[in-house]
Length: 274
Image 1 (tube, rainbow, N blue to C red):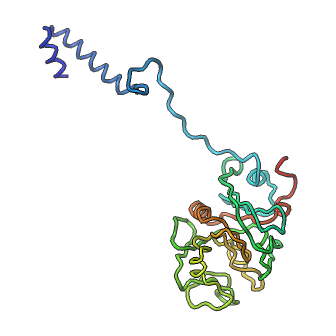
Image 2: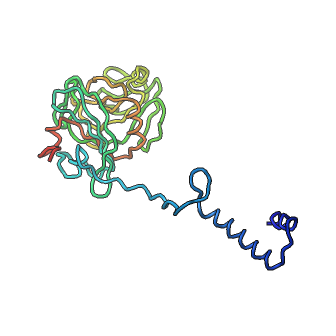
């Protein structure tokens, strides 16, 4: 403001009242410049300013697909109060291809988050909760997710095991059956480190089939059922790309659910077109 008054004194004489008026005008112009953003290009505004941007809309329940059917109670299996349910669905039991769909609980039901391709066991989908070992089938049913493993923790709320050459998954009857453990493994224990180096277990989420907290572990039923990387047919796991597994790990909280199976076995009635 002082510079403005000095320039005024060099050009013309002003009385005290006139100077006060000019100062008030300058202050008003400065305040107006702070409150009103100029239009693109920096010039003066020719009209009213645009309204402030609104908050993003809350997700709404899905109107089609597995998430809609979950919202409508058409899933045969109990998913409890899961915040997220990840479906691995095949068009028929004998398929080796599946579609992964992630559903997130919102007000009034579940919203669809993403859809990705996957592969399952070479024997297709097996019977509900009783899929036997060496059938190469992926079990049908609903199972919680509580832990994961891989090369490095991507930032998950699940219990996570960073793999080392001593990392194994128990396949022998005993205290380590269908559990992660570190130490010397023997067939049919799985060497997790070796399979990670082959690209399959770069990241993985455990499907709690035939194991706590869902059920007691029973030798004779299938074990080591995971959602893992690699996008390959398996002995019973669900396999997709690494980025999808990482996304599941980062979003998951203990108690989220997997629902696996052929569509005719997963849904109770009706169709997605209803």
